[in-house]
Amino acid sequence: MIKDLFAYPIYIAKDIISEEENQKLIEESLRLREVVPDGSACFDCSIYTTFASDSLTLNPVFDNLHKVFAEHMEKFKEEAGCEIPVSCGNSWLNIVSIGDYQEQHIHQGYYFSSVYYMKAPKRSAPTRFKTPYESQMGELFCKKPYLSFDDVEPIERSMVIFPSYIPHYVPTGGNVEDRITIATNWD
Image (cartoon, rainbow, N blue to C red):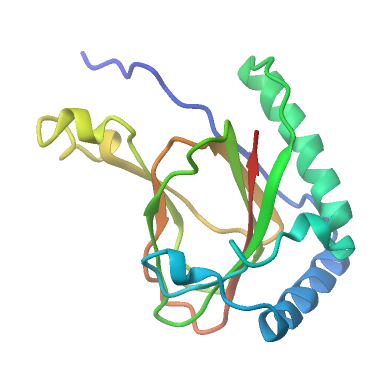
């Protein structure tokens, strides 16, 4: 008998804002791509990101979304039994175009991170989470899919919250239109 030990909680919420508000955020995101420098130079990836170049917490267009994020963070903490007070540390835009990818990474120095799927066209890549045990286990158990990774499919107007130390990445998808997300760290 196999029993999984030490499960990691993630929280998924759907339809967290209206379609109309989401469309306004898409328009603002596309505008930002035209005026804010790409911050992806500090990563091994091919996406456009405002990480390290512009925090969305300073943009009033995203204020309501950040308020909704905070409400869901409290729900996640309650359901997970977490009593640590957290606040939004930073927030940034990611735009994944044809053939783009985001390398595997963690969000060091934060308790939790979240991804909001603003636009997820057909054939968009998932957010792929890998076991944080992989480096300790080597090849011993990681050939079993239930231990090596799990995908969260991008669904427009949904968000996922997860512990920041869980390795994750976005593989190359088959999307023709841009996949647009907002990532947020909580400390």
